[in-house]
Amino acid sequence: MEKRTAVSLALFAGSLAVTAVCFAFGLPFFFLFLFLPLFFLPKREIRRCPVCGCRVAGGDNYCSVCGAKLEE
Image (cartoon, rainbow, N blue to C red; front, side, top):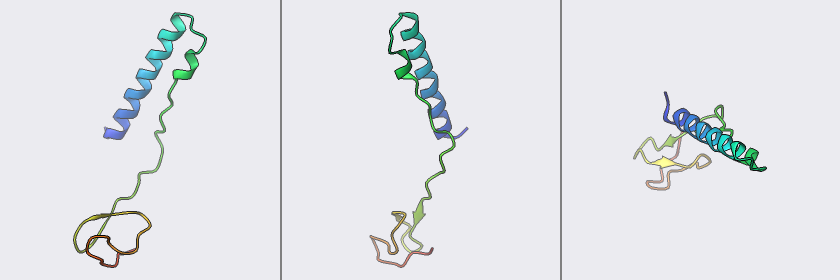
């Protein structure tokens, strides 16, 4: 299981637990604690410079460390 999925499931289980406790005590705002993790968000692409291997931002055309032109 990916770390991202495990964290989402843990947060979802925790939010359900908080919601159940608030509901059991009759608190009127119990629904505010329900957290719906976004399981199906696309993974962010991690780009690396082909020359130095440094991570670069998604929209950059050149490496900020060595100045090499990045591949598309």
